[in-house]
Amino acid sequence: MPHHHGSGAFTQSPFIVIWEVTRACALACLHCRADAIPHRNPFELTTTEAKRLIDEVRAFGDPPPLFVLTGGDPMRRPDLADLVAHATRAGLTVALTPSGTAAVTRQRLLELKEAGVKRIAVSLDGVDAGTHNRFRGVRGSFDWTMKIIDAVTDLGIPLQINTTVARLTLPQLEDMAERLAQLRVVLWAVFFLVATGRGAALESITAEECERVLKYLNDLAGQVPFGIKTTEAPHYQRVALEHPRVVGATPAHAQRSVTDGNGFVFIDHLGQICPSGFLPVTCGSVRRDSLVSVYRGHELFVALRNPDLLEGKCGRCSFRHVCGGSRARAYAATGSPFGSDPLCVYDPPSGPGAAVDVVPPRDAWL
Image (tube, rainbow, N blue to C red; front, top):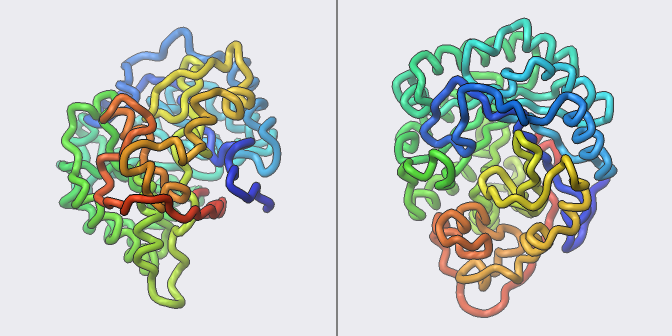
C-alpha cells in the first residue's frame, strides 16, 4: 500500500484518526484523560453528524487513515454497529476500544464483527484483579476484561491490549508481557502517562525508569509473538536506533513517530478537533469546520509537524525528526506544546543533528 514519503510525511493526511464517540463510561479510571462522565452528553455528535465525520475521514485520500472509535465507553452508543458498518463501507479500517464492563457482551461483539470491525483494543493494567481494579476504579473490571478477551478471541477478532505505565503499574510490566504471550494478542500498546484529566493526580514513573522500560520493550519486541508500540513515548524510536537488536530478529521500531498533531488527530464527543486526546487544545469543530482543512492548515497542527520549532533539549536533539518527544506531556508539564518532554532522560549535545524520516508500516499499528 503506498505511503507519502519525504520530510512532510504526515502533512496531508494523518496516520490515525481517533474519535471519542461518547464520554460516558461506567468506570472511574485513575488515569482517565477524558475525566469520563456517568451519562451520555445530549450534545454528542448525532448519528447523521457521525456519518458525515466518517466520510470526512475518508476524504483524506489514499491510503486512508486508520480509524479508532474510543470513549468513554463506545458501547454506550446504541448506533455503534451502524457507524462501524458505515466506516467499513467507506473503506476505512476500524478499531474499537471498549471499556472493561458488562456492556461488552458476546452478542454486541458479534454485531461489531459483522459490521466490519478489524480490531478490538482492551485495557489491561495488571496481571491480577487487585492492581487492575485499583487502576480502573471499579471492582470487577478485571473479570469483565478477561471475559471480553475470551469472547474477542473466540470470535476471531484481532485483539490488542493497552497498558498504561505509571508508578502503580510499573512493578507488573514484565509479568504482563508473560501473560500476554499466553493470549492471542496481535499488538501490545504501551501508554506512558500524561498528566491530564484525572491522570494529573496519578504518580508517573521517572525519566530513568522510562528509559529502562523502553530498552526492555525494544529487547522484548524480537522475542514475543505480538507487536509492541508505545503511545506518548516517541523516544522509543531513539532507543531502537541506539540499541539495534541482533541480526535476524524482528525489525526494530526505528521509524518516524506518530505524535500529537503529526500523523495523529483527535475528535472529542462534542466534535471538537484536537492534536490528540492528551493534548486537548481545540483547533476547530467538525460541526462547522472541515476536518481535512483543520488537520492540513491550522497553525498549531502545522507547527507541531515542524521539529525545528521544538524548544529546550528536544529542539537541539538529533533525533527530533524521528522522535520529537511527547508534545502532550510537554504541554502538561510546561504549558507549551513545543517544550521538552520531561519523561526523556536523553541529554543531546548542542548543535544541529541529522534528520531521520521513515514512515511506519500500517501493520505495526493495525
